[in-house]
Length: 169
Image 1 (tube, rainbow, N blue to C red):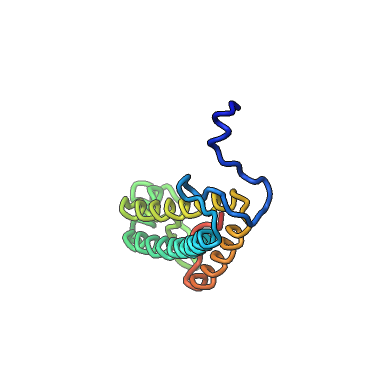
Image 2 (image 1 turned 60 degrees about the vertical axis):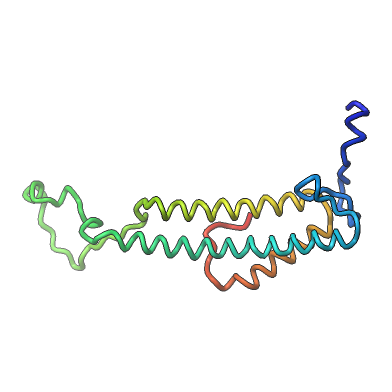
C-alpha cells in the first residue's frame, strides 16, 4: 500500500478493546472521547431494543395478516376438487365417511398489500441487524456489551408480545 494511502486511513484494532477511535457506520461518526463513546453506546442500546421490537411486531403482523388472508377464502374454494365434480362422480366408488373430511388452507393467498407490509418489516429488521453487526465488527467491547444489553432489554420489553416471524440473526 502506498504511504499516501496509509496516512489517511484509520486502522482497526484486531482484538477486543475499550479504547475509542473506531468508526461506527460512517467516517464522520468517530467517537474518541468518553462522552462520545457513551453516546454511541446509548445509540446502540436503543437500536438493539428497536430491532427486538420490530422482530416481535413482525411476528404479530404476519400472524394477523395470515389470518386475515385465510378469512378471505371461502370453504367451497378450499374443498373444491375436480375429481369430485359431477363429471367424475360416477367413475368413483362410493365410500361412506365416518367423519366429514374438511380441508384447511395452509398457505394464505397472495395479497400484494399484505406482502409489501411483510417485506418492508423484514427489510427493516434486516437493516437493524446489519447495523448492529457492523457495531460488533469494530471489536469495540463497549459496543458489543451495549448491543447485548439492548437485545436483552428489547426481549424483556417485547418478548411477551408474540412469537417472532424469524429467528434472531
